[in-house]
Image: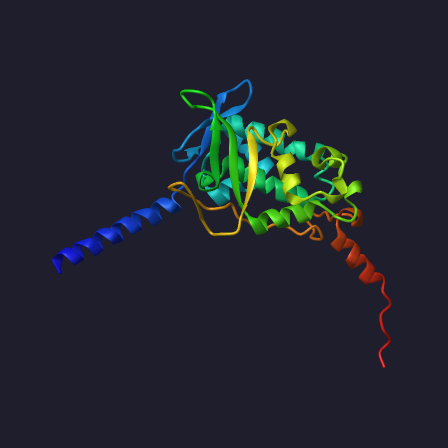
Length: 259
């Protein structure tokens, strides 16, 4: 009986330790180990405080009230925050600020990918430099499928895609009018596009957690604006958002006379 009690207590302790580990803040990357090429360092530790006041101001301008929501310790340092600001600005050059909802959604994705204190839960470094393996070069970014779908829907109007972004051909090839979510994320995850410091493979996940080997990953998950929602006082144009067109059509319909 005593042996059984000891076994149960040990199992409970292990389970508690596992749950605590699963909920603990952890990073996959932190800082730049190659400052010339802006390649981040592999770092499997806890988030570090951001004390640089200039970087904190840039973070607020770029990602809003991020410190209030996530605390002062993040998985990015001052240099990465300054680079993140450039990456978020690059969204405009890609035509992704024609619709403010699309821009705000992608901004949220980039800010969390670069700096979230829980980055290690959803970002896996899969390719790195030769020994001593300090530089991250390619990562898998595990994202909740609904989050990916809703972000994509806020940016792509399937009926009028050709009018949406000047980069449509470059992103999805000759058949850009039949662009798919996978093609779109695949193109935007390339480092050369300017949105990330590493090549990113966006991996849609439908489960609460997945195991890669013995490591558990929990997909990034957040609510996304619909393209017909007003964000920062701005609403998408009809040509960029089918739902806005539908609302406009409804408004023009004659009201039936009451009898």
